[in-house]
Every structure is written in C-alpha cells, then in structure tokens.
Length: 110
Length: 110
Image (cartoon, rainbow over all chains, first blue to last red; front, top):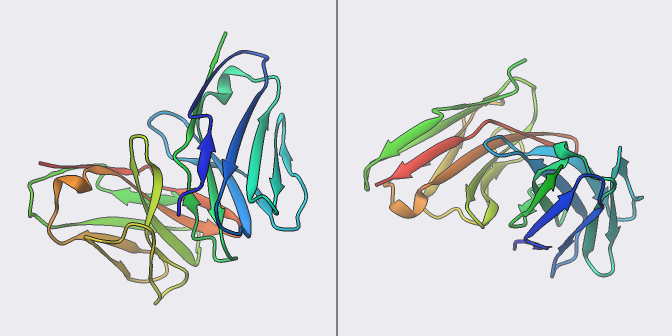
C-alpha cells in the first residue's frame, strides 16, 4: 500500500525552508527518501529505521515517528539544486521491497 | 562502473505484442526490483527478487512476468501489452539500504 505524501507540490525561494511529510496506515520498519530530477532516475537521500536516530545529509534531515507511522523530510536553507520530486519509500520488514508515495514536487526559484 | 543498465531506453508496441525489458547490474547485488512510474502515481513496485532464484510480486504484478536469469540479470516480460502498461519502467538493485536505479525504459503501447 502506497504511503501518503504531503504536500503534492511546493515552490520556494532560494534560502527558504520546507517540510515534506510521509505517512502510512501500516506499521513500518523503515522509511527511505529519494530525490528524482526531471528525466533522471531517483537517487537515494537517506534511510530511517525503526528504533533508529534522525539522520541528516548536509542541510537535509529527516525524522521518523514510529508510533504514528510518519516521517518528515526537512530541507533547510534550500538551494536551486534541491529542485526535483521527492519520494518516500516505506518498508514493512528488512527485505526493502519498498512502496513509494506519489511524490512531492519541489521547485526552488532564485 | 556501469551500475544498473536497462535496455531498451525507448520502445513503442502495439496492443497485444509482447516484449522483454532487460536489466543488468555489475555491482554484485543480491536484490533487484522492477518499478513503473506513471504521472501522479509515483513509483509502484511490480516484482522483486531478493536473491538469485527467487522472485516475488509487488503492488502491481498483473500483466507482467519476471525472470532472475542469474545474479546480474533481472528481466521483465509483457506477454500481451495493453495501453494501460504505457509507463516508464525502472529497474533497481540494492546494496544494504540503498536502491540504485537504472536510467529507465519509456514504453508506449498503442
């Protein structure tokens, strides 16, 4: 079952912050975040495991609330290079057969 | 290092025709996956192979078959193509928590 992402689209000015949310109706083992630029393949950003810590990547960080089956991706001081579509993928076990959400389109403007 | 290679990159089929999408990885990964991406639908898992010799259905397996030919290769077959199978198909392999995607196959079924 696909996780639900919100918002569907975001437009930011360079330097602004954004939060992308991902929620599931089922218990989760892991949440994975990927970014896809137009016409390219998705690229791994980070993973959050059940019982694990919040993990960051430069100015992009994420959290995982296991009880609520929710994850949020935080983009701080956004850069033009952050533009793209962000997908969360959820795994119910350690097999990493991920179900991805429909994506959040992020556009950072000068 | 080529990573994950998909062929062909583009294909046009007529309804009822059959074809096989090829995927090969040179990273010695055990697990491989097939996803389809449709506008507004995100990435949906078709089939996956946790290891050589095993395959499992994902969210949207109907109309597809897969073969894990060896550790390197994982092919996706459309026996009788339908317009609903018009999509971009991504193959991926996994190392630990990361999925590595191929560049995709854009398939149109007329």
